[in-house]
Amino acid sequence: MISWVEAHKALQQRRTPEGAIDFDGYRREQYLRLDRYTNRPLIVYATDFLNRPKVQACGNDVEIDLTDREGVLEVTRSLDAEAVDFLITSPGGGLEAADSIVSILRRKFGHIRIIVPSVAKSAATMIALSANELLMDGDAELGPIDPQFRIQKGDGSFVVAPAQAIIDQFEKAQELIGKDQSRLAAWLPILQQYGPALYQQCKNAVELSKDYVREWLKTGLFKDMSDAAERATRVVDYLGNHNEFKTHGARIGVNELRKVGIDVKIINEDKELHERVLCVVYALALTFNGTPAFRLWENSRGGALIRSVQMPVIRMGVPPGGTPPVPQHH
Image (cartoon, rainbow, N blue to C red; front, side, top):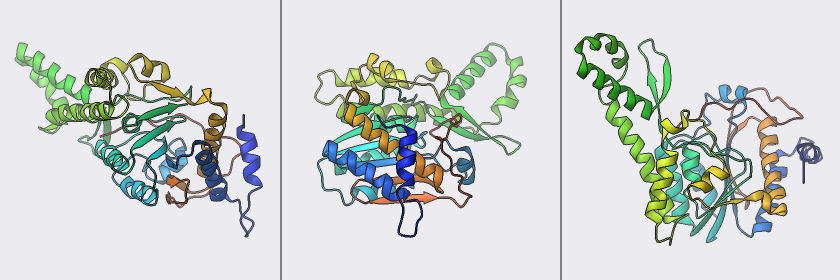
């Protein structure tokens, strides 16, 4: 099995005619190797969300948003295939953007196999669950699908709060004030930081995230199952329960997904597939680590849309690390 050091050495041997390291050529070679093994075009969506300096330099623009429509349209336009592999690495992002991406993919392809080699959280979890078939590395993880709200406080700063926590706070205040009106004075400073419609917006967002995933499961992973609706409801009730997980960044691995009825295939069980997926993952990490790229849509047949930041490039011999930023979707 290839190691990070071996991938780094192989990249150093790849040079452009001008003598620069050929990040693009090396990365796209790995896409093609995976494509040739699976006999399916490969689509890749990845953001450099683990690189703190890069995240800061791009203004935290590493989350799924509606600008990703351009990327998915660009890399699917030229693909003439019934079945496709879609590899995703993302901290999550917007509900509406996830819905747009899934809609484009499903309209274009009859069978979508989604590959999660590492981390796909929040709205990226939602996209992963829209698959007809889900492949994950044995150590990869998804996350809860409970929506998060970014709220501006009176001092101009922002705080990210789970929609369910806001709902619970409103309902707790209503209960306590209903029992004792003298409590209103203590609750007013807390409630005044929220807009009058926020309570209902939170309830709508929680239901919407569940509705999206429930429908995708019924028509994807659970398609043709007699109890598809019941299975899908069980999954969304589990993944959408903020009070169960306590944190939006909770790890949900293969075993947890299988316990709620999702038939996850483990990449590691196919040695050759695992090696080729790892080569793609290393090539992506090397590109992010050695170039200004921070958001990348590509396919194995030459299509690409890459967004970069203007910042000094730090070249390192080890993978980027650190604690990932808290993912969110709105």
